Image 1 (cartoon, rainbow, N blue to C red):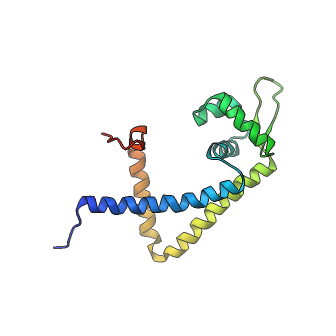
Image 2: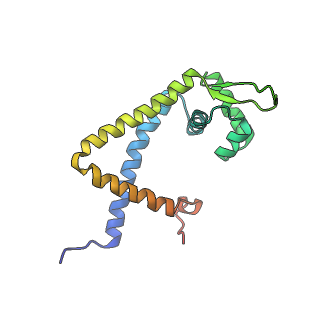
Image 3: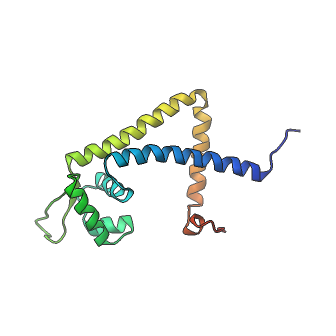
Length: 160
């Protein structure tokens, strides 16, 4: 009969592996953001505008879960950095559409490309293990979707 590790030991191993992955990927992403002077809120705003050009401040605020004043401050900084530009609507002068500048599109594209290149390199390094690793990651993604993180979980409180 094969030896079965206690659940706690397997859970600890899972936790260590998970945080090693998150830590290393975060280092890569944070380095790319820092090189461009981008914080996570700014980056989230840039990626939203890349996906949906023309959004207005109030829509971005709702999508980001922050106030319009917070978004306005972020937009001002991104406009000064020449990553975002304000447009005009003839039908509604109060609503100002926002979009990425060419420089903003380039910055977002380079960040995405850097992530893709790194993950492609990792996939190649896994060789024959790529299939099973991908299947395990897909199962993890499904488990996370079924049991999304909550504010309680981030504070270390048990969830039902």
